[in-house]
Length: 79
Image 1 (spheres, rainbow, N blue to C red):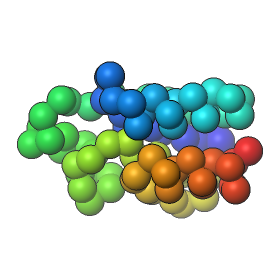
Image 2: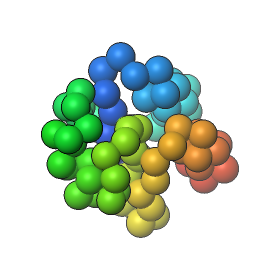
Image 3: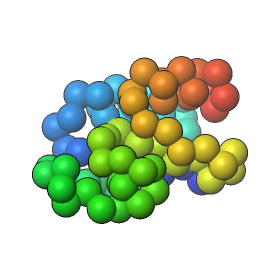
């Protein structure tokens, strides 16, 4: 499985996604982003926007943002 989470250190929404991935024993990589939105070029490249968290699931061809959407995806698709 190839999961990448784009996250910001100290972001509570990112932590919720981290926790869900850990609780479901899913292997993933974390790409830590810059604090300033204007410097999150990698996030924009992969998701079209600069907000975090962003989860990229290469196996399913899915890229999504918004923690609530990601948590639902983890529960319905990956857990």
